[in-house]
Image (cartoon, rainbow, N blue to C red):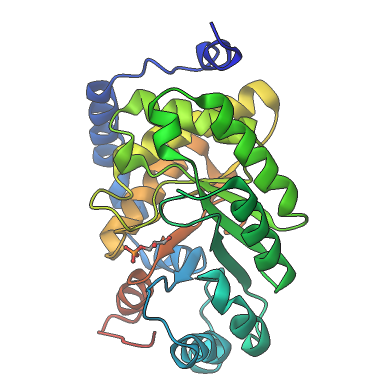
Amino acid sequence: MSKFDDLFKQYNCNISDESVKQDIDKILAAHYAENDNVAVYKQCLNQIDLTSLNGSDTDTEIIALVEKVNNFNNVYPVLPNVAAICVYPALVPIVKEYLTENVGIASVAAGFPASQTFIEVKVAETAMAVMEGATEIDVVISIGKFLEGNYEEVFEELTEIKSSCRGAHLKVILETGALKSASNIMKASVLAMAAGADFIKTSTGKIPVAATLEATYVMCQAIKAWNEKNKVKVSYKPAGGIVTTEDAVKHYTLVKEILGEEWLNNTMFRFGASRLANNLLSSIEGQEVKYF
Ligand SMILES: O=C[C@H](O)COP(=O)(O)O
């Protein structure tokens, strides 16, 4: 038995998909309504990693996005700004040059989104993004290696990437839609946290199944168990396919009920989203808003 099987045995890695679904239904039936209000919408807005990850993104488009973040509090003085702007590494210097607000600069790296490149390239890309000004790095695990049970290599890669982050926070994307089962999502969460992830994140947004409620439930249970055992609080980022206010409030409700109030801030909990901000703004303002 490998050291990783020993590690997984210490966590609830036999969690069944059916029990996950039943628990989610119970939690949402009991608690969704109490979170469906403007105060929570504002909190969710403040937790957004405002994301643009298109192959076609131009400097001009990213500058325009940054300027919207810069001007946000002139237009909405009583609302909180987003938490970070998330872009491809080549666009980090532009964000760094134009950003005037106290908002994070998140860069995907390490061969995002497929992660099918050399470890040397992953480490170099991470280091360069940090050097250019990224304060947060989002990387995908080697999904193929994970699925064939090569946990050692997935772990080693993540620890190397973590060292090249220096002071930047590392968000480890599990690509939960490719992992298929609650059991695999629990194992990948534990592996990422063991390798030093500051955040565990669901998805790239680049495959059909993204941030499901099932993934949020399992990953929050993993974070909770990790904290109970190791006294380390890892942050959580559902990302991909979170579009409506209702989507955000459902994820928020699960995080609140499983992890508690300590996670309800933008240090411990983010939403990776390209389309959510305008919908939250519309819900807050009570009319359709297309600011971003
Ligand atoms: O990490 C963030 C995702 O790429 C955003 O996905 P989305 O465009 O479905 O919001």
